[in-house]
Length: 443
Image (cartoon, rainbow, N blue to C red):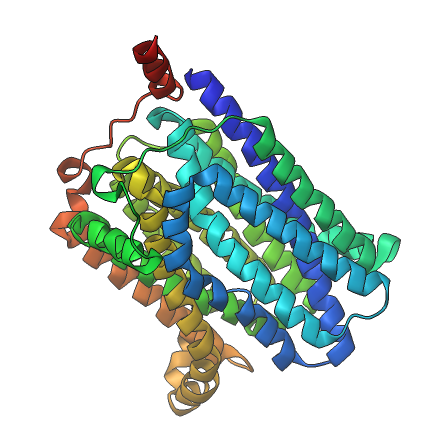
C-alpha cells in the first residue's frame, strides 16, 4: 500500500513539475515581452507584485477550500483554471490583440489559482506517503523548483527565437494539461472531516480562523513560524538586492552566472534531500543550516568580486533549500490531515507577507540609508569595499546579522527546541489502509 501511495505521489509530482517548468518558461518570456513593449521597470515591478499579493489575500479562503474539497479537487480546479487562463492569453497573442493591461488580469488570475494549489500540494504528501518518506518528497519539491529556476532563463531565450512568445504560451497550456491528466490517472484518498467540522460547514473565513487557532495552540509551531518569518524577510532583501549589488560592478551576463550558481545550490540541496530523506530530528538540523545563510551573506557582500558572490549564492540557496524542505516536513508530520490545508495557508501567508514588506523596503533602505551611511562613515568600507552599490552590500551584511540574531533567538526558544518532543508526529494509517478497513467493515 505504501508503494502505491508513493507511486501516486510521483505521478502527480511529475505533472506538477511539468506545469511548473512550462509556467517558468512562459513567465520569464512574458516578463521580457512586457518590458520590451513598455520599457518600464515600474510596470514590470507591478506585474511581479500582482504575482504575489492576490495569492496572499486569497490564501485564507483557499486553505479552507482545500480541507473541504481535498487535494485532488483543489489541484484539478487550479490546473484547469490555469489552463483556461493561459489559453486565453495564447489566443490574444496569436490574434495580435494582446495589450499590456491584459497581463495584469492574467497574472492576478494565476496568483489567485496559485493560492489554491500551494496548500493543496503541501497537504498531498502526508496523505499519500509514509512518514519516513516525507523528507524525500519535500526534497523533490525543492528539486523541481530549483530545476525550473535554473533551466527557464536559458531555455526561454532559445525558445523565444524558435517559436516566439505565442509558442511558449501554447507550450504552457500543454504543461497545465499534463498536470491535469496526471491527477486523473491516480486515485487519491478522501480525508474525512473532524467531528467538529461535520454537518453544515461554517463560512470559509471562519474555517481559516479555526486553522489559525489550531496553529496558535501549538506553541512550538508558532515559534517555528516566527523563525520562518524572519528568514523570509531577510530572503526578500537578498532577492531584491542581489541584482543592483552585482550590476554595480559586473555585466548582466555575470548576474546570470550568479543566479545560475544560486539555482545550482538549491538543485544540490533538493537532490540530496530527495535521496537521503533528511535527519530524524528536523528542528536542530534546520537551525544548524542557519549559520550557512549568515556566512553566505557576509561572503557575498564583503568584496565586489564575481567569484565570492557566486559561491555565496550557491551556499545561500543550498542552505535555504534544506531549511525549506525540513520546515515542510515538520508541518506535514505534526498537523492533522483534516487541518492541513488551513495550517499550510497560515504557513504560506507568514512566509509571503514579510517578503513583500522586504521588497518594499530594500531599495529605499539601500539608496537612502546605507549609501549615505557608507559615505559618512568611511571606516565601514573596510567591511564591504568602495564604490557604487556598496550601500546595498552593507545592507546585505546587516541582513546576515538579522539572520544570525533570529537563529540564536530560535535556538534559545524552549518551545521550538522541544517541538519534536512536545508535539509527537501524527499517526496516520498507511496509504490505502483506511480504504481497506472500510471495505472490510462493509463486507
